[in-house]
Length: 120
Image 1 (cartoon, rainbow, N blue to C red):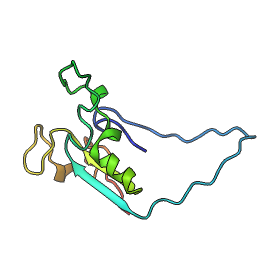
Image 2: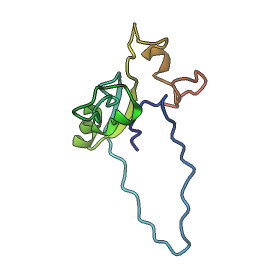
Image 3: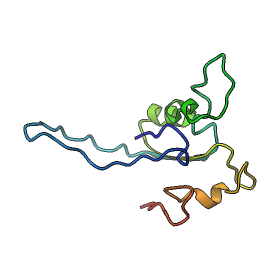
């Protein structure tokens, strides 16, 4: 699944599927063995890739598209599993805001220090 904007701009919730009692389901293919993780900034979360040619990049969420970023192209090319932690303006030692990548890399919600990702 790809979330196409900065995770702190919008949140995605998945509540499950409702399947008609007469529906036919198909087996899910095995997950690819190769796993690639990305930790980065705006270039990785697709900042500005959807900006119209005659428009200045305003940082609006609708101009982000992680699916068109190099990271997503890479995982599709190598047919791999994908995990991406990226935020525009984030740095390792200095950022455009009060958080650094070492503080959020293991969070499900970058704004909630208690939302820890289970790496297993």
